[in-house]
Image 1: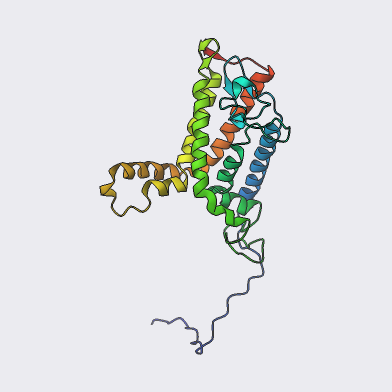
Image 2: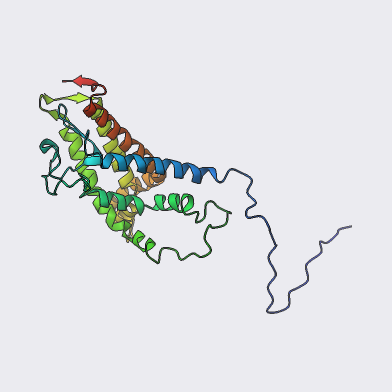
Length: 273
């Protein structure tokens, strides 16, 4: 003998079945709050360190090996050491102006509008929402259609500025091999090169770069070069979140190492000259 499950009565036309009433804000029992918390701590610590370093205006250049920290590249104010001003001293030396004033705004814009960083600070700082299946911390949501979030649309343009900044950092890393004593190679060169490689990986893995590589193409077979580049960028794009955090770490490490050398805390480990 078989039994049939009871079927709910049919709703009358025009009526909607009510949703289940759940008093709890979320039914999640895992530590969903841990990821937003770590993001707040990590980003806040990095921003605090970077802000202090940018406005210190010292210990950014190692004359003996031509090491220039990326936080001060390019050094363009009248306050810069002449040897570190690879592109000239273009701006006045007022204290409030960062020495890398020409590139910092664009670098900040590229990071702030990055698709991963949007997710990171939307969930952690704005709680919008803090996690999946957790209520939004705000009553209304307008998306990125109003100021200041309307500026997120500038990300595709900030990408080009980020490419220029990466080229400048690459040039700094190359110049660091040519010290006043001639060609040289030390631990500082390894750190500078590692930072440049990670910066390029993060920049190229950007969603905007992926669209530039393969967007608006109807037939990949007719564009084999762009297809191969698009495939390469797509593989990096999967690691965009990890690269975003790695580059924050390499930037801080590079700056700290050069600051320590410039301050005389310890000597550079030299392999050649």
